[in-house]
Length: 173
Image (cartoon, rainbow, N blue to C red; front, top):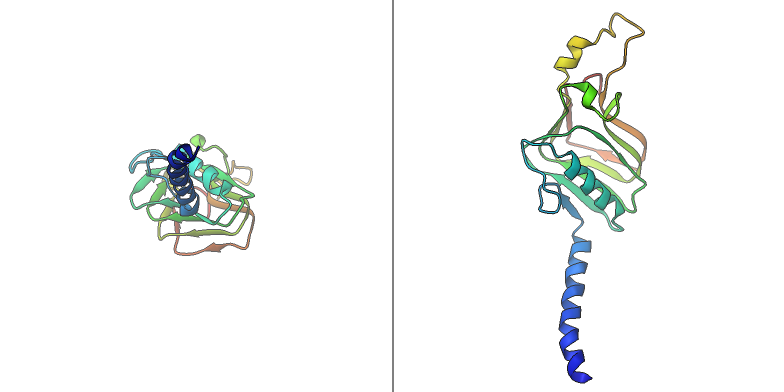
């Protein structure tokens, strides 16, 4: 019996250390092997999966979009999350030029029902609005169809936004 315990104990300790280090890291890089995001490509799935994992974390977590330019169709990142979460955009996220590709007609990126969100990183949310501006007649027609804004915050509390740029929204910021 003692011999079996000596063989099992090191394996148990190493599994415990691996699972503890993964749980404590709290950093969800969309370009990591877990998520597979790559610069100059669509990271919609990678970013959505990273959000799901970070939001489920019981300790403070950080989603990182590193330097580079990434395509992003859009999403609403929803809580409640189990702990504070930081969305660190170091690169540039670009919206689709064609607003009809957005998941929601009035919002490119939304944050909803989150307590303790930090939006930071020095990056840029680029709505690529120039095409949409030419197609919109809201300045003349009060019954026009509304087009998407870059960022929307619904029921977000105890949060910080710093060192972020939002540019060329299809509608407004």
